[in-house]
Length: 308
Image (tube, rainbow, N blue to C red; front, side, top):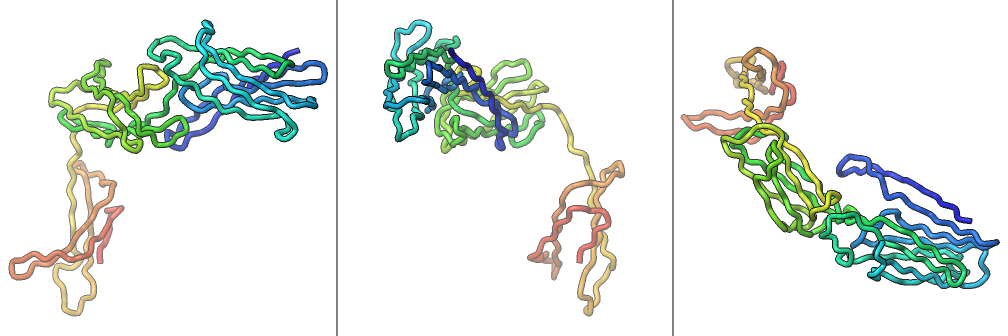
């Protein structure tokens, strides 16, 4: 009889800060009298990448040659890959076979789902046929802009971090589009190379640009699984005005003074305090010449802060 096992695993990615689900693993176990044969293969086979197939034989007393053949499905007219392993006592009758299918053989330009058939032959004991869905995932693209909101007329600075499916820097080519809030592509770069996994560029917004949510789309090809995007907002905004006041505790210095204390405060014009970081530089004026002191003070809270 045949026993079917289905496993699902997931992991948390520290780059994009999201949870991803790995491919479902299907384990087909065939039990014949006292012998047991199993084939573990990805339910979704990524072409153009190395994938592993695990085969095992239990309660077997002699070496077995296991052959693998992969065809297109349902046509079964194109041989995509073939190989073999030998199960024996030295490997405890279990082996991991690495395969890689050339995506060109499956005509990835066709916008339809693709399947392949894996045929595993355990000598003369058992033959197993499995239909696997094909994934054309080429890698991952993480897109970043220099800020989330832009004024009309601003320049959008963005970069894309490109990796392969193993999250290693990928110096391949990608296509980049910038779309307005209506989903219309207003700028496109085709077949741009990511040097050492990084592609960067700028886009100048016009003064009469449409406000709303814009999108940067980067992709390896036309397939949805190879398309990635991020959003930024365009709207008119004005940074609030505020005043910064420096008030010395003494209006004059004596020759015996060892310190000069200054109170720094910052408030918006409507009276609320300003939150942020300020840098203050002091200097002296001598005979009409302004001389800057070499040290700089950093302030994180400007409410009743004193410098010495």
